[in-house]
Image 1 (spheres, one colour):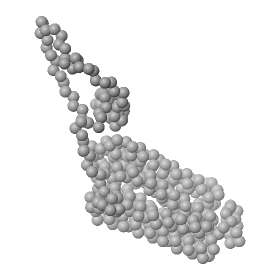
Image 2: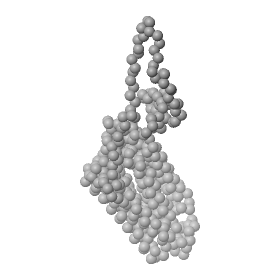
Image 3: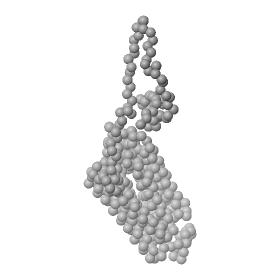
Image 4: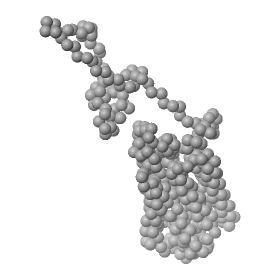
Length: 361
């Protein structure tokens, strides 16, 4: 603790500091992390531009890429450059917090957008006020950042070893809890869309429907991965242990290609060009068209009423003379039952769904 300042020694509980050589290694490792993530984000922008992937589904991903690139610069580059400048270090700390909450907020907006398209509630862009996808995350990020800053202002930029959150005081919760809540809500909304039945219809924008079905499958993984990388970076700076910086570097080198795949494989144009065999092509392979079995369609036919003459006795059907069919105690088909349970139009007949004998395939 000989190299720490008086302010830092007051609330720092970890006895380790990086040596001069370890600090240089950590610095260049994190510089490479920032360059690596920016490279993959730029490549993602280029490929989507070449494949003419446009629309709000692409723009919200582009918003995420901008936020992630800025976040990587703040936590991996500026953190080292302004350690000794308290005022600039304070700004870097604020920026690191704001950009992470902003990124999580954009993920939440993407989850709502995709969920509305999967459930067939909108023909295009999910919400009529689609501009909210870009305004709300900015406002959402500002609230916890401002609240934390005005209550813990004395600790921003005073660490003397990094420009991040100090994990031993309440400042940590302002950095972590808002992001955790946004990521949890994103995962919940995305997973509910994943398990819902497909309610897409022909009037919807089919490119956005394709994007939405794939987006909800990858949202939870991507948002958790970024949040985990951000947390690991925070602990690496706080604990000042070299192997934690190495773990952060490994996570970033996986994160870069992951962002590229996630932001390209959900676009129909890209999948039509790149889908195929092999490890890479299989990531973009499209599902075969769904074949509807004629036996699944309910055909309702009206039987003509027989007009009995005055001297005709009651007619006994041939089927009545044969043995009655065995009673089935099997469950009804789960998909039809779920469709009836969530149907608000009243088109599905309750008696048919609940008591009709299941088909045997």
